Length: 191
Image (cartoon, rainbow, N blue to C red; front, side, top):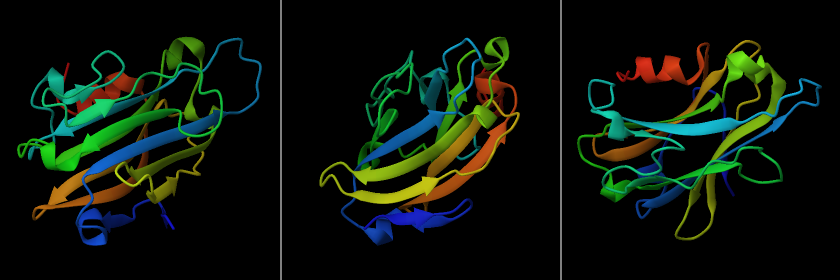
């Protein structure tokens, strides 16, 4: 039975299951019915942060044009441009033991592609969730349903995996940002 988290809650993954290593971070959402004339394209991105809370370089930004970290510890399985169908819309795979010791935090975000040009925001998105699975057993470990109405935001930090005293922890974040992907890129030390 998966643990259901609320915004701001944290869980110690290492204490929960010391053997946990290969995890999947599944992200899903639906778009409200409206006649905007443009398709919605939501994109998952991952920022690998060092102790200063910044990316060391551009290779620490994993997204649809850079699907894997240099050491292959974090892999984006590909861009879903429509979000059609049930289940996870996009997925990130993480090998926790392989993540560079220089990386303290793995931040998982979702942005709306060309949100400003298409006049779209997360207020038009429903049922957004993130779930963490044990890829070795297929079991769902935890789930966080965002449930908030982000009326003007075009980027949302869904969750973070972070190290604390050698243990991996998960935080349900759910923080929205205006300015789309560019705002997040700048916040995490990239241009």
